[in-house]
Length: 364
Ligand code: KG4
Ligand code: ZN
Image (cartoon, rainbow, N blue to C red; front, side, top):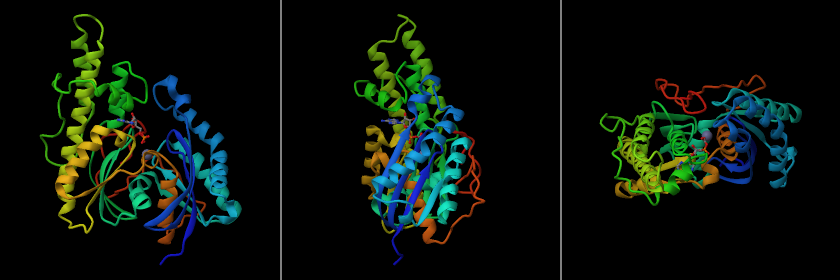
């Protein structure tokens, strides 16, 4: 049995400045504190994350986030065994801020420094929340990520599909913009969709006619633009019903694509004969009730456990970074002060690069 360790995690790869403390061993850890300072208000006027503003805000907030996370855990740095930090992929200015902060703390206190891949943080979250055994299937769906990962070990991930253009959250956000709904758009589109008719507009189900688990969402957004213009053609305005029907149609199309591609990913995964078959989701889009219900139904039919970690651990946070650091520390994989910040860092170096990017730039 590994000895219990206490890890301080730091995350600053996009628009959340986060610090957290996690204690435990691989597969059995607890979150002692998790602090997230969002930056939504700083970027709101620009319609997206502005890298320079993000980097500056991280540099200003990181110290406070770390102090608060340690305080809420009832610790100071003398109680910490190692410092884990997101070293990529992400917006380079933000990643650099986090890495510099972590290096400073590690050097000052003589603590081990561990560079973590942000996507590994998301992908290992089911082990933090539920101690899920390998191998499991992970669907990452957020504003910046969309991929199926076979998680074979803490340092072995196989990407078996992903988006070739927009991430689903990005598509939700763009559709919200087209329909004059606030940002981030996902929750607003979901709310409108509740009263809409998903069948009124004929929308595509991109790439379902092609084998495999790759996905595409940018055409769907263009289809919504056309349908919106047609609906407005007569009166020049978009009625509440039109808007609800467009949202319902879009959400149904995304749900169909994610569910069908998940079915294919699960078929492949099940051929490996996993002892405890599990599909886990992470990312902000996993908050969508219709998408969750679709995945839940699919899993129930296949005898697979469906796992959606609590939302604050599904979206960007530092507890996942601390936990991924815990797994690496237990494996003896520690970095030194030469640790670099990587804008691009595919989890599965063996798979070909994806064409798609998402709002944070190409990642995998
Ligand atoms: O994981 P997250 O907080 O940050 C990223 O890594 O991007 O995800 C944010 C994304 C946004 O695009 C947002 O519109 C989407 O998740 N989102 C949703 C819902 N809640 C958040 N999309 C669909 N339905 C929702 N209820
Ligand atoms: Zn993320």
